[in-house]
Image (cartoon, rainbow, N blue to C red):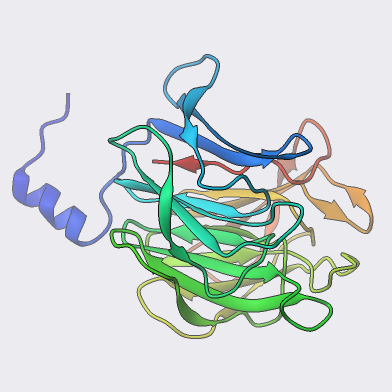
Length: 268
């Protein structure tokens, strides 16, 4: 068992570099094909079936999730009738149903998200509240430890839906996605923001391959994007970006099968 010097641990937490010691994974919502609000949990360190954690405030799909060491957050997407703006949260220490956190700056689905231990950032939406082609460049953020509505952060370099989020404790990235609701433009773009600030995103460079509605995760060094849809066909491509630099993504390998809309997870 590791022994921490109290001052050392405090310094890491204040710098937002303390490890979360990942043990709990949550899979929230989805469609079967009707929308569900069920939240399943797994212990990352043990193999076995998922168990019931609780329920979202409202069943939905195509949102995004992230978390801190104390809370899990779910930005709602759509419920097959409406595009939603509600944000749900749960405290990890009290297993049960999610509660209302507040509202996003605009309703919509097909979001990308990432967080550090203080802030969560949401990138882009597909939403009919704006003019056709219904795709937004909106970035908003929340302070995870509080409650309330999201605040405008800035804009992506272009309108996007179906991007996927990754990042480090200092930067958040929106990888790939589509610029129109016909899903015919599969961008290779990658945008980035400094989580602790506000302002418009800057261009990171290009992904190795354009894709829409894939899945993503990251360490503090690399961001990984997997699967999605390209030119009407599903893809099995896995690609990576180096988070500390700018440039072009590179090929990582392949999934076992071509797929899109892979289940998003929240891990702490």
